[in-house]
Length: 110
Ligand SMILES: [Zn+2]
Image (cartoon, rainbow, N blue to C red; front, side, top):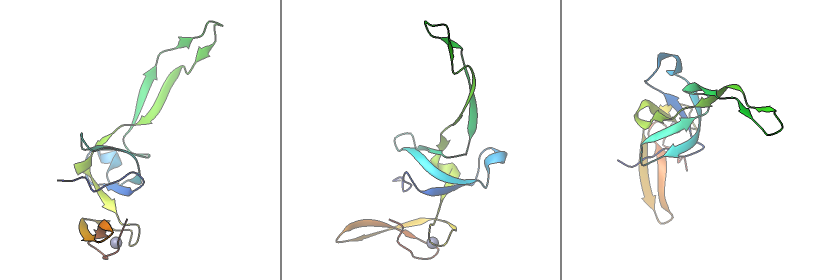
């Protein structure tokens, strides 16, 4: 199955960790080969950064860094920008190429 979600789309989490279920966010990175994507504000993890010292003895970025971890593409659904509903996508082809169409409101999303 082809990945129909692109960078810049809004998606909603439909399964996975309870705290993130129902959250919506913008897709900031897509990894089609792994079928995973990164969503702004979803699946926040904390990375413990080691203290780094420069030659001048100053510390850079000590402590914890928050970042969005990738989620499996099957855990999210696209949110239609026209009707704001979670939707499945139909692909419509015409002379100009293929377009994604919302199955809820028939709006062309591309
Ligand atoms: Zn729609």
